[in-house]
Image 1 (tube, helix red, strand yellow):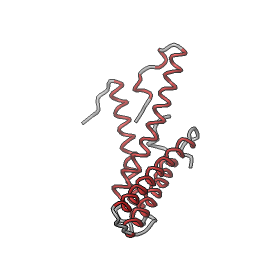
Image 2 (cartoon, rainbow over the protein chains, first blue to last red):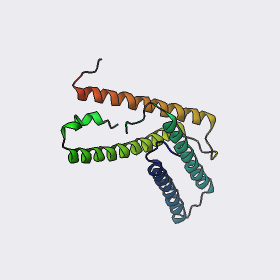
Image 3 (spheres, each protein chain N blue to C red):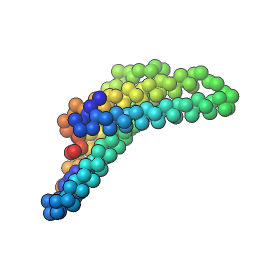
Image 4 (tube, chains in turn orange, red):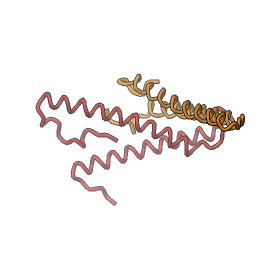
Length: 75
Length: 94
């Protein structure tokens, strides 16, 4: 996904960071569940879907930023 | 959102200084773009997605995100223009 000819790799890095962040939140939640000995499968799959949706939004916004001529910051 | 005009006239600087300033501004702009991107994703996600029955976005959520992003971008453009105008010493009309 290239939003700008100059920095596709930087944007990809950001995406990866974003995903890593989400995954970390997910894992922390999971770990806390185990700690509390309250394995709620409903909540785990909910978090999984949340992460998945966040990823979809990230891609969608990336597309919109990439194709939109106006609103792009002057680089 | 960053705009080079907020730094006044770069041409008044000597060659090497000008290059340094340009490089710094370029970096700041890149960082600013990425921040905007992340803030936008976060904002639109929070505003538009509140159910997690499925892993994919619903049509309604997708439309919401598109509108959210477009509105945000329009806002950013206007904001940038206002700041540029202020920097020029102009006044924004009420």
